[in-house]
Length: 374
Image (cartoon, rainbow, N blue to C red; front, side, top):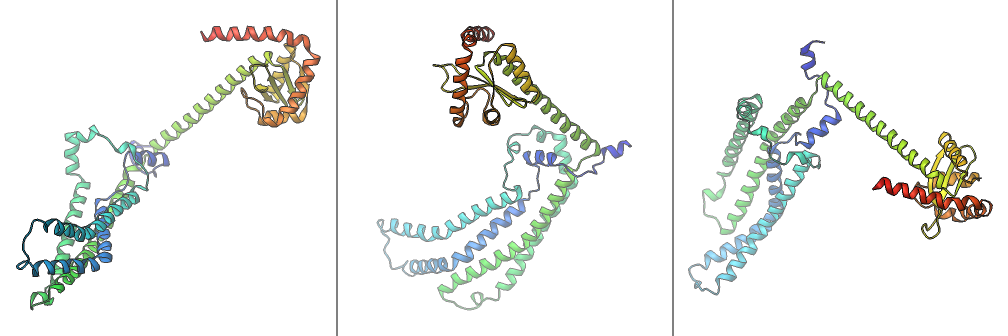
């Protein structure tokens, strides 16, 4: 394979690469989509609320201007008039602001897939590199964005030209009209201009977002060498995890075997399972599971128990349930109290000498554990 083939990005990006890129904020995003979403929200809110608001604003304006010459200017009337203005105009602006905020959040979530990109926040010192910044200014990406900006200017110019031509023929410019018609004209003009602007910028935003999506995909493409390196790393991680798991299992088995000589009893299947229990009155609320194993490890538990003369009791159902439900270092399940109590009562009666020696054995084991901890 030649060096050119190794360095050429011909492979699709892996899930790991896509996830890492997303966390860094490297995903398709377009500012034009945010603008279109904001304008569309404003258009929707205006179209829904402006009809009633226009009549109210027109009535208020007509009342104010018709009585401006006759009404006396008093200081006690100003707060009332100001409150009324805030109520009327606030009733128009508040829905617009709420709609804009919701649209901005939804469009941002659409572009990010409603996921967080924690690594995208913060200062990136590589962005302060003057040479790289100079290269970005005169790059292909910069030229494409400049073209999109020019396309936006052309689209807005066409909208203004078409909208102006359709409005100059309105009677408001050629003949006297009633004051109430002014509000209706402003409503129609606003909706007409906004709808055309949203349509024009929507087309530009679609082009911009498509380019960003294509560019992001191209940037995240991988070379064959990168794919191989990632596979090796993933296999290494899997092997490391497996090795750590095996090490943890061996350590757990070592600890269990060390506790077997201090057990009260080992309950067996007899060949498949073995569970070692202990119970110290005044210290344990219920019998504790010291060790458990199946097949080969069960045989090691039984052999070590026999070496230290730990009582072995064969009870197939209890052994199976203890192995399945019991957890090492924790009390036995409640539903096994009665069965285990019967087994312990039996071994206490039949192995008195063992339990007499067991107290000394446990004291020695606790002393050794204390010294190791110190």
